[in-house]
Length: 162
Length: 162
Image 1 (tube, one colour):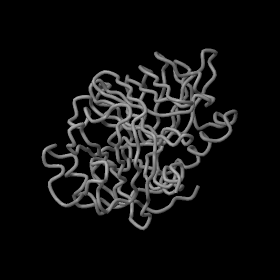
Image 2: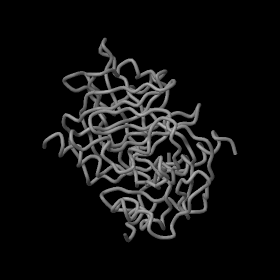
Image 3: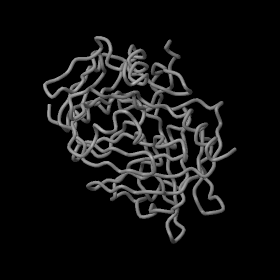
C-alpha cells in the first residue's frame, strides 16, 4: 500500500469524539466546523488543540487572541455534526444555535462546552494545528457520547476491565 | 467552575482512540508512550499529530527527522495501554514488542500501525504538538477498537443512524 492508503486505512479505524468549533469573523459573521481532531494539549494551563485546513471557511476567524467555543457532541447530535460539516453557507441555518454576548455561536444540546481563546497557530504545509486556552465552560454528563469510527457514528459500548 | 475544572470535566467526557507511539533514542534505547491525542493532520501529504509534555521521557527522541511508529490499539490491549503509560523503565519489559530494522519498537496485536517521521514540533509552554508524515503501515480491521472516555476503557457501541 502507498503511504496515503496506509494513513487513510489506519485513521478510518481510529475512534474519535465529535466536536464542533465555532468562532466569529471580524465583521461579526458566525463560522464553525465539525472536528474529530479536538484533543487536550496541556492541563496546566488548560489548553486544547485541533487541526484544520488553512483553506477552510473558518480559518480567517482564527488567529492568536480569537475567541472560540468548543462543543462536545452528544449521541443524539449526528444531525448537528452533519450540518456543521456541510456547505459553509448553510451551517447556521436553523435554530440549533444562539449567539452569545461576544457574537460566538453556542450550539444547543451538547454534552460539554468550553469557551477558549487561541494562543498559538502552527502552520505546516496547507494545514494548521490551533492551540487554544480554556476560559470557562460547562458539562451535561447525563447526555451520552458520540463516537466516529469506520466512517460511521457509533454509541459508546461497555466498560472493559483494566 | 474554574477554567481548569471546566477543561478536565469536558475532556473526561470526550471519547478518544488509544494509541502507542514509539521511537528510539540516538543511543538505540527504545522509548514510547500511550497517547489519546493522536489524530490526523492532513491527507495530502498524509500527516498526523499528537501532543506531549516536553518533560516526557520520550521527548528527547523526537525531533525533526526522527522515525516513529504509531500503533492503534485494539479492544483486548488495555494491558498494553497501561504498560506503555506506566513507569518509563518498565515499558519494554515483556514480549509485547519487537525491534524493527531501525531499532524502533513494534507492538504486537495492534489494530493498525503506521511508520512515520517527524516533520514539525510546535512547542507551546511546557508541551508540544508533534506533526509526523506517514511512510507506510498496515491494518488489522478484524480486531475491535478501543475507546477511552469517562476515565475508563470502553468497547465501541452500535452504529447510529445519520
